[in-house]
Length: 320
Length: 243
Image (cartoon, rainbow over all chains, first blue to last red; front, side):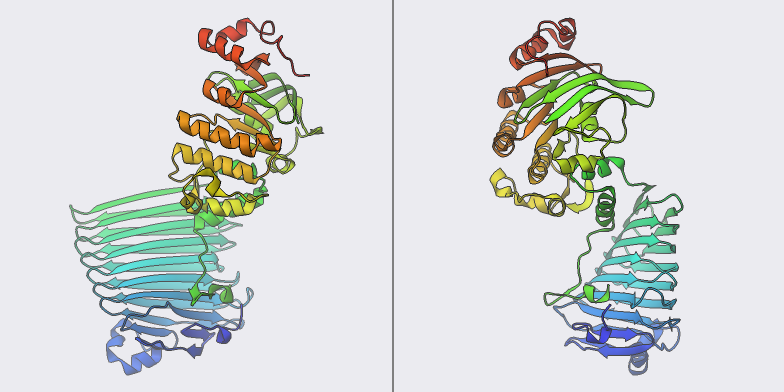
């Protein structure tokens, strides 16, 4: 990974416990969380206490480029506790790329992140969240999304290098006619992953869809709890598919539907298995080795790695 | 090009193929006919090296080399290819991505009067029957093979699409010296590709081998496959035996 300070196009970058760079964009306020806590009293309801680290992004007007944040660990044994707050004002369409990463794979760091994302009435947020960790790291990530009426959220989380332990939690609260689509992809190698993702259909005609793609390899354990709670007449669907790549890993997928409204419709599908022999043989008959075929199937399963682009320049390569 | 000698194959404890002999020379088209579950697709997969089958006797040679124990990809690298009867869907991978990985030669999709959007779709996901077959043929052409097994290319295709695909096969494969083993139970594809040799397979055995595909097909349509069993090794087999 390159030094985050040199990365162009990043709006907020933090290395270890230091803010490295803030690049404001017309139409948005971008600050360290503690400054926002001091300057905007209304933000305090979103924080449990005065934050010490993390970012505040307030998108007040339409911005035509994605906003990018990067929180990195560069030194051994660093412990981070970023508290992030994102507010998307009414009627705005915004896109955010959020990267949490390590510079080296042997730093044994701790990252405990908490984020609150508010998508106001009739606004749209596309958020891509990328995690990249080392084998000795410990990570806890908690995120809450509040969608006001007719707001839309598309959230794509990808972690292709898990830490030693990853605890990931998301809670999404949907108001009238709002909708949220989640695509979560995790590839665990030598890691222990515990995921709890819940969607609350609180408003009529709200809809939530959660698609989990999880792979466990090399003595890994993944526990994926996904849940939709219908408090109003909405629609929800859970789709969880797991692939086991070795004999010593295990996946537990627990989809849960809780319907408290007779006019709501909740569905789910879940499967865990190995890579299909038929697909492997097919690709091998095209000249790919077994390993190449597995890599290709895994890549497809987790979703294509679409690079983070800013003005035609690939940002994500700077962090991987 | 391809020589299958006295090949017998088991799955579990069940004998699937018995004493198969086939020899296909350069640029030759051979057709393998037979009813459902007679072992035709098994033979295609055994030739390609699929690991689910146990070869109990015989051997397979390709370009003079014994390939009986080679892996699927090693056979593919030698120039063998298989067009699947039911190609699997591979979610998340676009056809263009696969072609990028496997191609030994560039294929211009415009030549095939196919919507170029197919390249940006996931492999076989939502493809129509015709699109699946065309996707198979595009992949095979990109591999620049010297021998191709077509496992029921004609299944589920209307006559116009079949004619179009066989025309592509002639133009892009046969005219470039590729040999073909055609597995089918329809006469139309025989008419379009005019095989040099036709075999009839029943219950895992080749009961007939003839240089006169028209006579074989006439016998089948008039009397059914069982009739081929009756004339086993006599009338039709006498027309041509692989050397």
